[in-house]
Amino acid sequence: MRIKKSTLISEGASLLILLALMTAARSSLADHYYVPSGSMEYALIPGDRVIVDKTAYGVRIPLTTVDIFGSRSPARGDVAIFDSPRDGTRLIKRIVAIGGDVVSVRDGLLTVNGRALDERLGPRRAVERYGDREVLLNLTDGGGRDLPEQRIPEGMVLALGDHRGSSLDGRYWGFVDETELYGKAVAVYYRRGDGFTWRPL
Image (cartoon, rainbow, N blue to C red):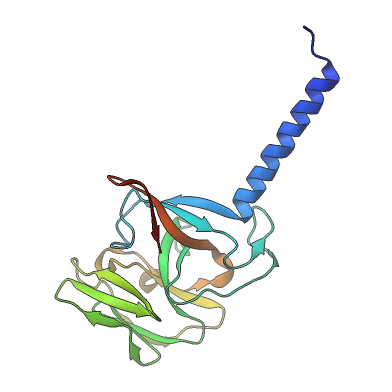
C-alpha cells in the first residue's frame, strides 16, 4: 500500500503544529519542577516533583517573561520558581515579603512590618505564619545569615528557603523582580518513598 506524498506532508504538518502547541502550553500555562536540594525542608524535600502554575502571576508570551494579560503580584507565603539573580540557576523559594514591606531576619526568624511571623517550637524548629497558612521551618543548621531591617522596593520580593541555615537565598543575593517569577508551585505530586501523592503548598 502506497501513501501519497501529500498525505505524509499533511500529517507531518499536523504533528509539528501539535508539538508547537504543547510546547507553548508548557511554556505559558503549566509545568513541573524537580526539587534538587533540601533548602525548602520541610515543605519540600530532595527528589520531590512539583506542579507549577505558570499563569499565577499572569499569562506570558511563550518562552519569554513578557505578560500578555492578567499580570498579578505574588503573595507572602507563595512558593515561586525563578532564576537566581546571582548565577541564573533555576530556584524554588518562598516569597516571604513583597514590595513596600519592611523586613528583617535574625537567627532565621522573620519580622515583616514590625510583626514577627514566627513562633519558635524549640531550638531546631519554628512555625512561620502567612495568614491562616502555617509553614514549618527547619532550623537544624541554625538560622543562616541575618538580614538587617530594610524596605523592599515596589515590584520586588524577598525569597527565602524554609531550611534557613542551608539555603542560598535573598539574604545573599538580594531581591527578585516580580517579572522574573516563572510561576507558583501548587503542590507536590510525587515524593520518593510515597510515590504519586498530592501535597498542596
